[in-house]
Amino acid sequence: MKGFFKNTRFKIIISVAALILAGAVIAGAVGNGETAQSAVVGTVFAPVHYVAKKVGNGIDRIFGNLKGDTEYEKEIQKLEDEISDYKAQLADYENIKKQNELYKDFLELKEENPDFKFEKASVIARDSADVYKSFSISKGSLSGISAGDAVLYKKSIVGVIDKVYPDYSVVKTVIDPDFNVSAYEIISGEISYCTGNTRLAADGKCKMANLSSSTHVAYGSIICTAGIGSSIPKGLVIGTVTSVEDEATDISSYAVIEPEANVDEITECLVLTDF
Image 1: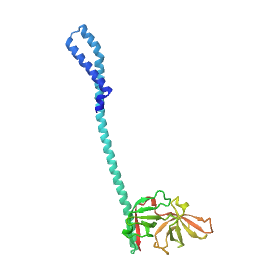
Image 2: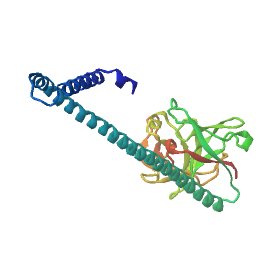
Image 3: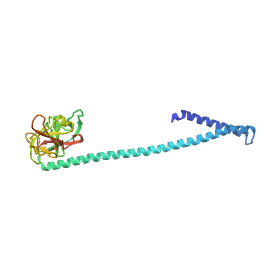
Image 4: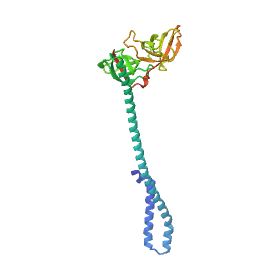
């Protein structure tokens, strides 16, 4: 506002006002008669009156527009605030929906396996430089979590606990080459093992390795943990077969698996601490 009184437009308005005032004083002094002096004054100040009128109208429009703009900005701000509130409510709804889905599957898994013991945890960090998508969770040894414990999302396995600290843990995912678990195909019952692979990890996939050339594992087969010789129980879903390929190094085959859970989208998980 202070800048308004200092700018060129304000100075012009003041100058015009001074001329108008001077004209009014002179006109009052010479009276209403058509003397030579009054004619000269009228001639000189006629353009001034015209300009003053235009300036006055312009000022009215400016302040009217300023008032209108202020009201407009208030309405915009009000709408933006409402949109922010709706976005927050939608985010809360989505989080609650995901948690409810997680708890629903957890309860079903618990009913099917009453000996299972779980610890719920939140994803607190991700290693963006890790092609195998390891992540950290909010629970550690103080919550009874140990290295090798299976990490679940709904009824599927997403990895195992790799490193344990008192109040957090690091998860190694199923696409990591260091991840190994016995596995079977649910229709044929064919057994082998699942592990990660550097090439497949780029697409977020893992493989069921060491299959025979006459394997019954095929596109669309569902692969689950077999529970053989490990700390991971039988029946946890690993994923679905997208193709069966021949190994380049020997006569065996392997199945490419699309993991059931998308690690990038997981915000909550369950750690199977005992079974």
